Image (cartoon, rainbow, N blue to C red; front, side, top):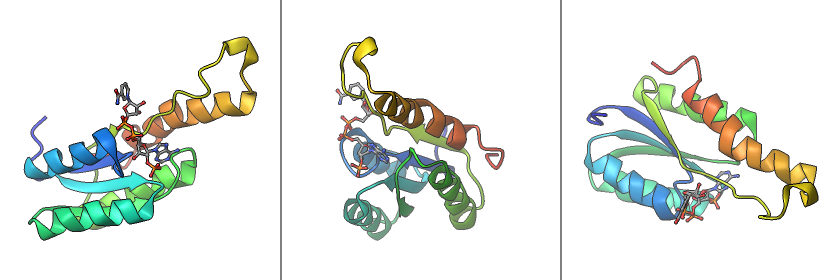
Length: 128
Ligand SMILES: NC(=O)c1ccc[n+]([C@@H]2O[C@H](COP(=O)([O-])OP(=O)(O)OC[C@H]3O[C@@H](n4cnc5c(N)ncnc54)[C@H](OP(=O)(O)O)[C@@H]3O)[C@@H](O)[C@H]2O)c1
């Protein structure tokens, strides 16, 4: 995908692969909305991108919250005129225990993080 001028959400952008992707995508010309729970980390990464001539905004929150996914999309629309794509990088492997020992709450957390949130972002009707 050609990233120049594209409006892209990256979840899990406060560290690791997501933070590296933010830097790389910005160098490729993407306009970024960065998400994760750690606000200070997101602010640092966003400031570095904007001070380096890129364009980025951030919103801290938990991708397991469906309202947060919608808020990320709205921020992309408000900041960059729309949403072209997303790197749904925030992920959870859960407790890594046998499925018959799994706490249902943990199961729902894994599904919400890995499946429901990407659908809410990438499948959002406001994506162009
Ligand atoms: N590194 C590997 O070898 C590897 C291999 C296979 C798959 N992966 C997958 O690649 C992705 C990134 O991995 P990584 O190694 O870069 O891990 P990481 O450094 O721990 O980064 C995970 C990111 O996801 C965010 N995150 C986690 N749960 C979240 C939630 N509920 N709501 C919002 N943000 C959340 C974290 O931010 P906050 O803590 O600030 O919320 C962080 O920015 C993960 O999905 C991981 O499962 C990694």
